[in-house]
Image: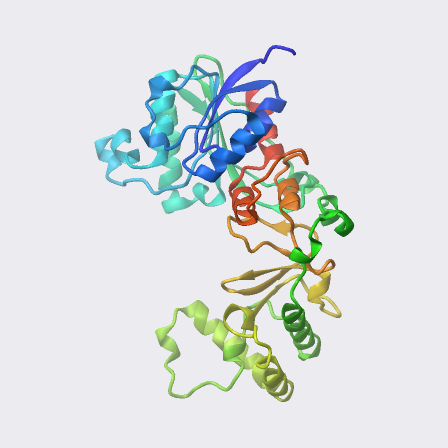
Length: 392
């Protein structure tokens, strides 16, 4: 077996998205940690390395020497008082502080960090300022702005914008500018990651229940019969498809909510006869309550709208319908997207593929944990792109 080119550590390791990418590029993992016990079990099953637990309880000198520090760390607000009192005070109590103390002790050549899209603008830019300035003070060069990237840029059918931060120790060199022409984004197809239904054991577990099918059929009837110039871009709230209550003071609500109430009311007034009859039947469906009595159509304007031709999710804000070109970002909950054309939910294996994990990857046998772990994972192919750029 060829000798590994470099050693790396995998902090907040989850199920090893960084591990998959860095090993593929010739690296050897010498240390991993994650606070989640189920993630640690999945990690050990797949890589033969047992991660440590809570990073805040790990001394830096107990971590082996390494060339690259990898971390997909949680985004937390920093203290504004720290600008006066120093970086350590600013980052104290956050998990970024633990990354900093390990970098300060070991001084690895490189660091590759990943975070949510919101980090770029979090706390009016204060979070990024603290991170950037602290890493520079620790002796690392990095780009002045974080790079934002998504798997769908490279043909993987998942819209998942994340921030990537590449750091090079100052005595080694600079980080080359990262350039990607978004005009050259590859077209995505959800078919690229879908399993054949015939290959899925216990396929019935993933089927949309009959009552849910009937609910979606009701919503299809609604969309196909309302008279509108174009399909509503605002959320449809069925409890607001009625005449305005003259005794209700709408000024008590924020302006965005007032706007949606008025738009729903206008939709109702223009389609009163149909909507009144439709609501009577809709309310007989046992699922027609709460979020399922709301709809967000985000699949563009089409001649004959059909939710079964699209991808949709059950969210706290309602049933959200998206075009079937790529999936919305996986999240750390069991409720994954429904593939309209298949009338079923995404399987854990399909979630693994959306995160670029190989089919040999052994996910948690508890499905709820598997969905959560893939929702929290970093995308392997995206990490490869930035690791190559950093280490070249």
